[in-house]
Amino acid sequence: MEYKYTCYCGLYCENCATKARVEPAAKVLPLEMEKAGFEDIMQYLPEGDAFWRFLSGMAAEGCCASCREGSGDPGCSIRLCAQQKKVELCALCDEYPCPRFDDFFEGYPVLRQDNALLRDQGMDAWGRMQDERRAKGFAYTNEAPEEKT
Image (cartoon, rainbow, N blue to C red; front, side, top):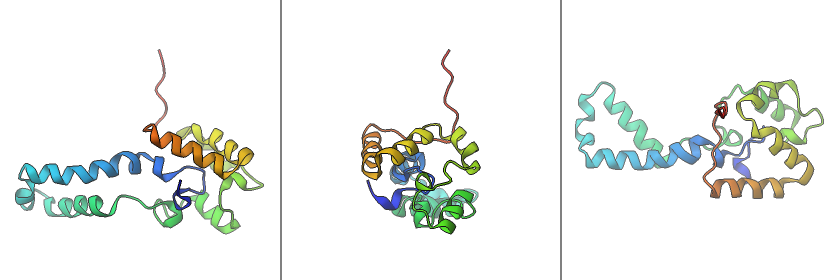
């Protein structure tokens, strides 16, 4: 687990769908498109050159660093609050959980239990869990879980 990929909110960037799924796909897609001859025809497609530069850049540099490193929504109220309070992780704040997390927990249901583990057992236990998840192919998504019928 790399600390720079820990978000103030308690999400771990390496387990984000963007980093875990989109970034690896972005590395493969330009190669497959080159094999199919797209590199030569992109200039003739609407916004093709811009798309090709974007995709090539994403493949070379990745999609996201982390909110701690400057990626993500610059206006994120959770990040701004943590930075203002000089709190490394919200779960360690005396005011956690605050109202900023009400909607966030809806989009990321595992976050509540993850932050409880972080608070109760510390960063090492939380980091091991994140590494285990990553090894199993887990990825956060900002989607409601599917209902079982």
